[in-house]
Length: 147
Image (cartoon, rainbow, N blue to C red; front, side, top):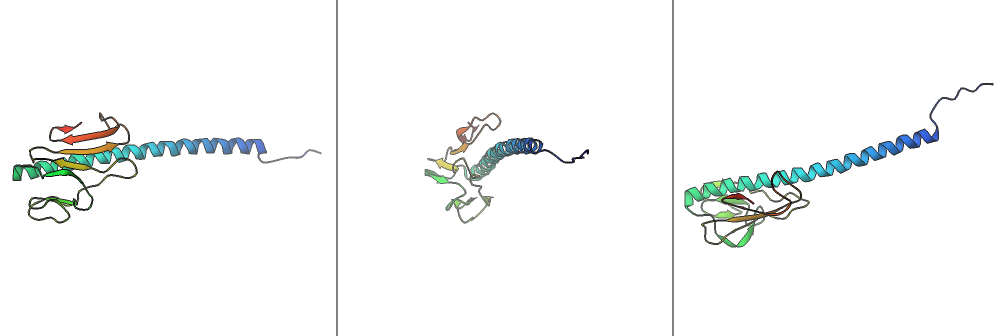
């Protein structure tokens, strides 16, 4: 008697499951890397938008908003940028930035703005990985650009 067996053996099924598991692990790792790069790209974009708003503020007021102690941008007390209130939760006068962005979580750190005398400013932020020419780690933005 000849038996006609149709189907897969246990070994074949285990090999297929192992291959699918390996491919899904690689996909998840690649996705996490892409998410990290996207957050860093957003951080750089946010800083450039804030810099543009600060330059508009400077053109109208001949100084940058003064904040010697350091202001956490996008947080309580620094949600907008306007001509009368500078960085504040409420805008008054000309509004340069209605909603100041905050750091993308997870990773990185809050955007910290400082300006001692209004003649220049510094914004510190942290990148998780390489973003274009910028190396990972703590970065500083000022009127000359991002370093």
